[in-house]
Amino acid sequence: MEARRAHNPKVVGSNPTPATNRLEWGTAKRLCLFFIHYMQNKQQVCIIISCMSKMYRDVLYGLIISMSLIALLASGCANGGSGEGASVTFEQLFSNPSQYNGKEITIEGFVFLGFETMVLSEELKYSGYAEGHLVPGERMLWIEGGVAADIRDGLYEQHMMGPSERYGKVLVRGRFQYGGQYGHLGAHKYQITPSKIQLLAWSPTQ
Image (cartoon, rainbow, N blue to C red; front, side, top):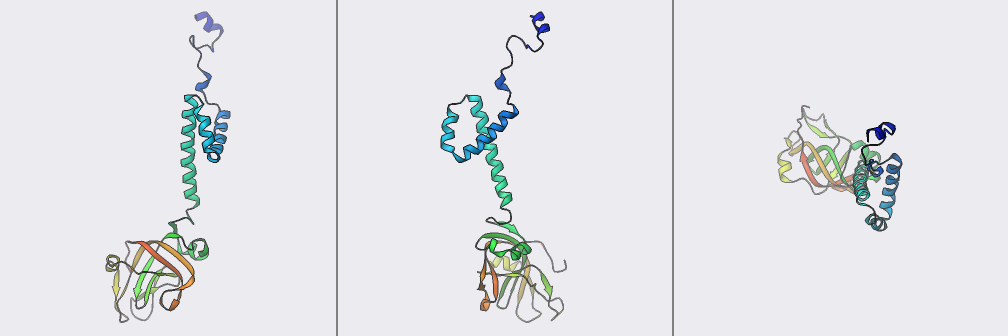
């Protein structure tokens, strides 16, 4: 036995390592192509897999699960700016409103509730009419359906101009619409119908 090993150093014991224990690069590439074929012909491929050896069945099932997860994650990243519930900024939303029209979005902004006014704005600014008096900025969405009482009670309140006004920073998820006339007297071109509103930490001095 020792003489045999000396003349043939590749021999390992009396039973050489099976070739099937090694997945070569060419095999890996073929498995990737197989995955693509599987996604298009699932029923046919499942029949083929059932006829394979257990080792290759395990490998293929593992590959299919892994590639499916990767595809799902990639799809989520690709839809990050336009899919249902996608987080968007005011800049993204107003630059291309048709991309989000009729879709569920998530957006951060400032809610302002006042006389005939219920809007989500990109920013708050000083009105100049009274010291410390804040009003919504130029880019805003009409909030269809208003704001729940618990959210309203958590907002800041001001009375400088007579009627009570409330405001604060929020994260809103809801259905976005554009192209119509929304809000009081149809004065707004953009609207969101909230499904969830979350108060965010913020103060007027920030």
